[in-house]
Image (tube, rainbow, N blue to C red; front, side, top):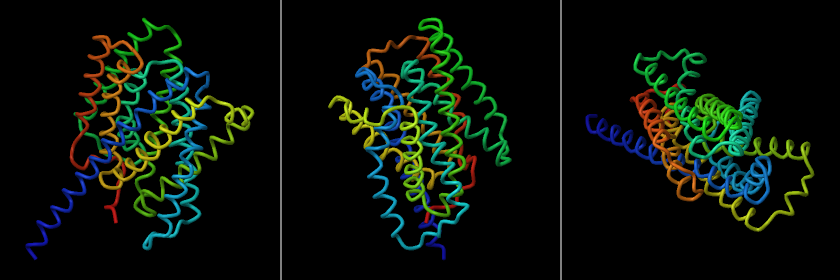
Length: 317
């Protein structure tokens, strides 16, 4: 009887370590899509082209993942209500969020885009307050204020240096952060029913369908067949290393840690991109950017506490 307690504790600790590793790796890989998008824009394509190529090239991977997960024994049957929620999650998580993000990147540097996406954990927290009646400690409200103050600090500097287009681009990226926070918050309970990998595979198929419908309505789809080899190469890297792998890693982390903790680990992505943007794209790193990044990072880290999940998530099977 007593020997089972340490074994249970060891299993829980190992589950948490795996979840933290998945969340951290997923955050860095997912953030790198901004660098690839900037490189693709140099070849004369726009946000919708980038998104359509990304979804098309990653679709076979997610279909294969979905088939594999559906054949696993023990999964609950997907109900009509589940399908409805999957449709909503697919539109929010990887269609709207990605579209707003890539569109915003046409107007703002990757350093500011990542800093705005720093706010994702604060959105998850607020969604937990208003939608799931979660109680919030005083230090968490302080953390929210600190985070938003840091973003405002850097935003004003970019607005002064780069012009009014930064305002529009920042608003788009903010919508991307809100869409993804909604996705994370709403996915927690569904993950416990149908499994994290099966959910993400289905959601990505929905996102791909929404993206292609948008593309067909907006322009001639044959345009995607006449792009440069460099664009296709960058799109393939985006699809595998900045979409398929980080998406599956993130959902695995949510299943093990909960939506709140997984979102908090996303801070590693923006930190890495501040320096990757300077190295690969030649974007300047100013003292104000570094101060603002440090302020926002400090605010988000204040939100980290054991069991601070905005959405109740059952233990992984």
